[in-house]
Length: 273
Ligand SMILES: C[S@@+](CC[C@H](N)C(=O)[O-])C[C@H]1O[C@@H](n2cnc3c(N)ncnc32)[C@H](O)[C@@H]1O
Image: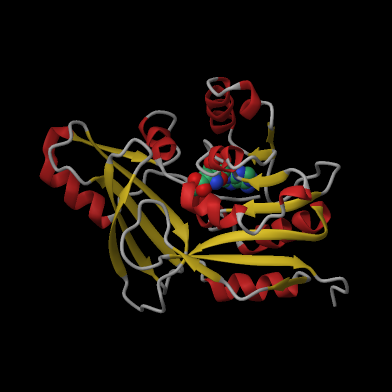
């Protein structure tokens, strides 16, 4: 398993420009830092994405396996929808943060969540699930070989008739290399998300910062992700023995305006030829 794109913080061009403007108030972080980075991840709103996923999971299908759960952006809304969730996450710091947050939840919700430390590209949990879910920010961290490992591991953990759900960013076919979007966090705080795509290098630089220019400290969080298009994931899933439905489009967390996300829904092909 190799995730060299995950390391940060990355000096994105937007981060450089912002930090030059805000002077001493400016702090550059990676999304994966234990302090400000994960504070921002904890504020990220996953309710609408979890609802889209939940609507495609049969409630009688048993626990949901969530891959690369982070600090629970999707885990908590899925639990709030009444699902039992097994949350798999690699990072020790993220696992600890997720467990700490669960401690603050009512027993009914906490008791429906099992947190396991593991690698989404090679895991063995010894049981099958009616649904496996993963978000775009997570699958984009994996290199080609690791995505093949992910699909193979999911195959071994999905019940026949079960559903594998993958959320993806939807650029709406736009070829534009840069986009800005305003988002709200769970706290109600507003953020700007800036995405700069480099198709030649197959990467995208993500920069998230407060919409309020006066914020102090002015925390700029960055990350470099692989540029992974929905079409490519659909092809890979089909090669890995899944049938894939027509993607559903939806509006992501706190997003405004047009639908900006897609949900891929895959199921095991009985004859994976
Ligand atoms: C962008 S965050 C997404 C977290 C959450 N699922 C969400 O959608 O907000 C990606 C998460 O993947 C985790 N991660 C990275 N590589 C992993 C791997 N190979 N297996 C499991 N988790 C991994 C990181 O630690 C991080 O928590």
